[in-house]
Length: 127
Image 1: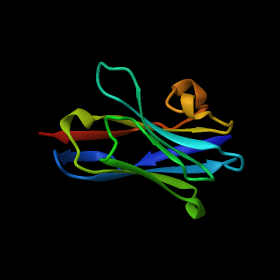
Image 2 (image 1 turned 120 degrees about the vertical axis):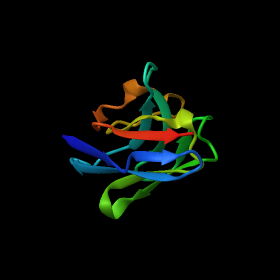
Image 3 (image 1 turned 90 degrees about the vertical axis):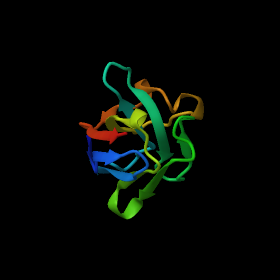
């Protein structure tokens, strides 16, 4: 089993930055990809960004490209989501997800390909 724990959420003002962390533990050997998703009130959960566990190749949703950066620290089995120039529309619960199976690039933004999920962390951006 793999456990994912998010941290780093909070309340910030528009234009501020936050860095979310996703700490993985358990059977991380064989992990293939970590993804970040978010869910705003009354909306469906949506893809934000993903990073391949070994190669570090990254993927971003168009809505965050250029503002958010996903990165990794293999020594700590932790992945990060650096969020800059935050906007009120970024307000959501942010979830870390992981897959121990290979994920093709075309499907990396689909929730169904991830079998491990964290509990979520709230990010609130005030205007």
